[in-house]
Amino acid sequence: MNKSDSEKEIPCKNEAEVSEAADLPEEIEKILTEEREKAERYFHNWQRAEADFTNYKKHVERERQDLIAFANTSLLLTLLPIIDDLERAFSALPPELNDHPWIDGIKSIMSKTESLLKAQGLEAIEARGEPFDPTLHEAILCCDGEEGKVAEELQKGYLLKGKLLRPCMVKVGKKQEENQQK
Image (cartoon, rainbow, N blue to C red; front, side, top):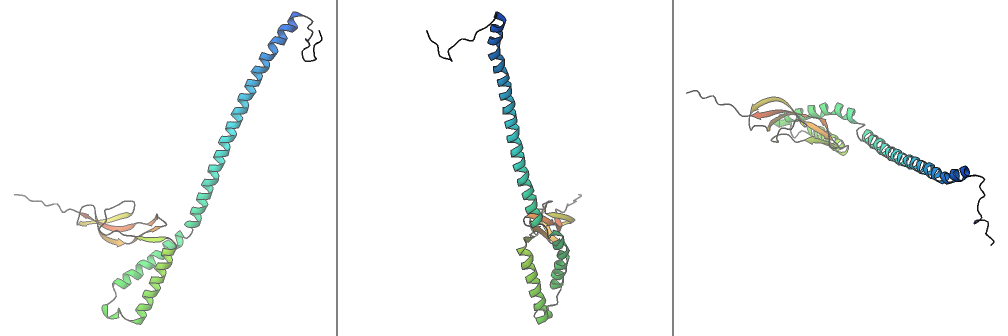
């Protein structure tokens, strides 16, 4: 009977070589399994590293966007006292000067400035009559009034693109304790 080359038996010289040849596939299988596990660990580590890098890139991009969005913060903080002074000046303006053309010009400049600041994302915080919120308001004084509500705004507060730029300085209402001794 003629066997093909793949079906031919490998001649063995002794029994030791036969048992060693039988153990060889088990050892190879064991080594192959270990190498597959290593490869799988390397693959998972690579996936984790890639995900970490993607998250890092997103974080850096968010920080860059925030830096661009809030780059003018110090300039705006410098301008706010000027706006406060102009508002106080207009509120103290004598009634006979309200219709003066020069005052109208200053009001126009103030209006344009406020529009410009609003376009940059600046918005005033409404405080009067609102519940006191320590994240938006800075309580300076307490006065008679509705408990826990802002009774008076002493200085305007502002948000810049939804984030607090300057808190409102306020007077907070407090119930007056009635001491009735009989």
